[in-house]
Image (tube, rainbow, N blue to C red; front, top):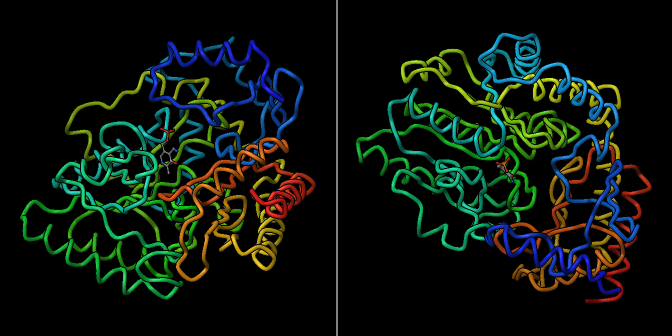
Length: 433
Ligand code: PMP
């Protein structure tokens, strides 16, 4: 059905005064007004299954989180230069979640801020400016985090407008990259080494390397086996620091691991987190080693007005409590494994379904026109997402070719909801697009 006139009118108002670069999902989006667990409801009372929301890990409208935030707002909220219990307690809990040795925490408000600060730390600690990153990556919108973002889906000019201190390595995409399959780390490294040698020859040193420890923006694709071990060693040999952007893939979403880097058997020097840690409340953090954190002290105090506020810290701690009590990482594993198996079964029945990437509740279903050439099915993916909306499912494409379904629902997703998604997807693939 066509949207109500009020919904269309509100969209016109949104597009008039909200600066144009801030796009919304869908040409004719539903106007949503309520959320509950993995469900969203529009103003006409229609329910949607939210399969794309990687922020609301506990689910929408969690009453206990709302109550904790509300109570803290009434009691105290202020900036982080004051002395209050929540900031000490939350930093302690984040440090305890990180590998040994990473126990210095900075609290900020978003993933962009966390990555910006991580890059600044790497540059301050190493005394160098050059950063190595990956192609087809997204790390944020702020100056430094945007500089190391190379995804052309997010910025079509990305490949020609990076500053000279940014060096983007060949996309280690084990599905459609230059080298395919899990045993390709050495081949990819052979393409990175000449870049590192060029940086060496420039004489200005290497500050660090930033990447998602599961290749998230490209569609949740696992990195080649041993890739991070080898590249981290090269970076460290040059005095650079290794930053793991865990904004999307970390914090329990992978189900089988709390951190994405565990899958690669490495420990980074700096971890950045955001999104799920606040379940939608603006919250981000950098966790690093003490001596790295100290390197910023020579530049003066670091201060973020609302980063680490009492309300933010209480929100963050309540999210951790609820995750533990509701066993959400475990749910991500069991429901995610079930969903992955259901999606994998589609590959046998539908030629367009090329591969299922990822694990836990971080999955990517990649659509191709041809399984040999892997020609991306970009327009088909958009049409499939539009049809899924009609069937009551929120789903969006990801990756440079916009041909991968980004399946990142709240971690409380039930088996029934996972089955509904798989059933509706099968229906769309049977119907055609
Ligand atoms: N890193 C990654 C991997 C992300 O996916 C995002 C957001 N999509 C960011 C960083 C930036 O986070 P934020 O939007 O909270 O600034």
